[in-house]
Length: 245
Image (cartoon, rainbow, N blue to C red; front, side, top):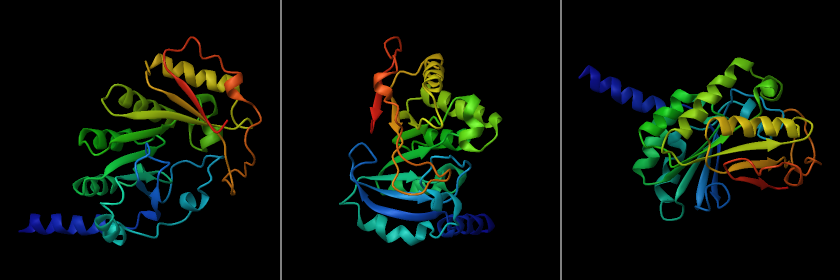
């Protein structure tokens, strides 16, 4: 009887704990063209200078899972996927139960993550709760503190997540946001070399910084460097594609 009560209490707690900033009810751009909604998790364990989700990262959560329950149950015929985004979703242990609940409703799930919580990512993969993961490769180790405002030793946690994904059957991509005030072409080559060392064999995406609002580091305007014309990709064993250049 006591165990049953504890389980019921835990179920109530995760469903009513405020972890979300907001929800975007419809998108065709964020999950392989699946009609999807985006769940924006509040808070982050990074403070990336180019981050345009300043309010999501710095403000307290406003909503819990129960607040969106009716939405999830009534949109099953209209959307196929749910994107777990932020902020950083994996700083919230509740993400495991949230993903389970969404899977029971037959949604496909995408996770956007910075990779600093390989334990949570591994759990999501092992329990078959994620259909696609987008992992942000913020910078090489030499600039990790400067760009993410975290400590350099956390770079190893990112590498652990990278290795986990590469050695799993999980569908995923690696991407880097480029702005020439933060990263150089040599930094991109350093990232490419790391991916090669880890035997990465999917497509690596380099995204040109695009911004229409204030960023955490007050970064403005897109990069002036045209990377597609500069980076030599001929000797890498994986594809490299560019976004917004």
